[in-house]
Image (cartoon, each protein chain N blue to C red):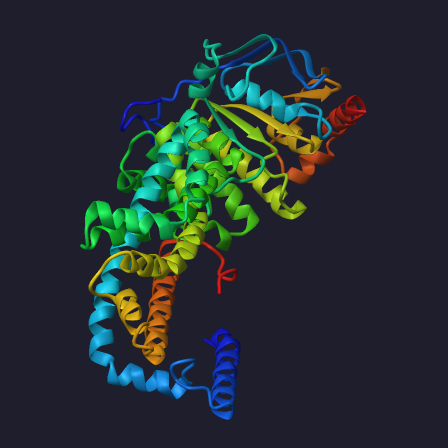
Length: 263
Length: 250
């Protein structure tokens, strides 16, 4: 846990959050009598973005809980930034859960500032740090609204801002846009790509949406039946519009390989 | 306000029927007074009832606040210690089987005729629904919210303050509302066990005099007090739980 008033100048060129890598080595997780994860290896170099795709129930969320330090593997080793104990992983990872998990009794601003308050920062200071980011994330004017008054896309943005403000080197995103309609999802994928370009982090993204993983990540792993079914390096031209990217032959070929591996 | 009309209409119809039956059958006032006799007792005994009401209100309010404070502290302690919860919660349930009517005279012997034994009786009667609802409310926090807090620097205390306690407020208030309806009865038990003032004492004195109209008047005031306390608790809930979608409570 960072000290009071630790560096929290998120989305700021001067910030100094170090980047940690993730190493998952021969990890096994058994739930009931099912090997949800069966000797899985995943490597996420510091500062890179890796996506995991697979069907529902393929063990994607289980893997994220393990990396986050919320759960322990039955065998194997998970290291985040050199720390392999669960509490060390917990200190280095911020998890954005599938549901936005905003607290209904807090305003949008206070929800975003939650992690700052948890570090012991007074609420006034936490608000002052979170406030300026609202405009940059297209949330200006909604600071005082309770989550019930926000649209699904706005709630997701507040949840992402909250995760970012925890100022941890590793972001674990669990189906961040799973609950949104297709148009809002496409908008937020673009928005997330921009936000991560401005604010590089080590990212492990879990999704059932192959296109989303290919758009946002440099490397995509397919998880099927507790094994890594395929590893794809995403080397597609990203300069143009979203439409140009997703219709390029290289993108389509990767998409085809991923879908085949999912089975 | 619209919700108040159906029960008010039903109540008015019941009072009308009561009046008709009592008058038609020539029931004497000492057996069953007509609504008009109760109303005239309310005005002619206004001084007596007013002084008694002040005494009883003090017992109800202070006893109720004592119950809320003790219940919250105990519930929070039980929430943090599962060993204590397993040991103490069954005993608390068991303690509820001891009739308060029997507890009141013992307290009067121990503590005398002052306000203290009444406060304790009121608190004992009101305490249980608040403790049980608070413990349940604190334990029913969404586990996903707790996981989220843990990955966002949230320690045990932060999780309690920012997730469990605000999330438990609706449950705490539903316990507090149930308790509010018990408080007046508790005060009367306390006064019956030994007192020289209060609405319970007025009822006790009117009984041998066969002044049934006065008993009814005192009961009416007691009901009004319970209703006021209930309304105050509901108002406090509206202020403290503004994110709660309105609907469920009457």
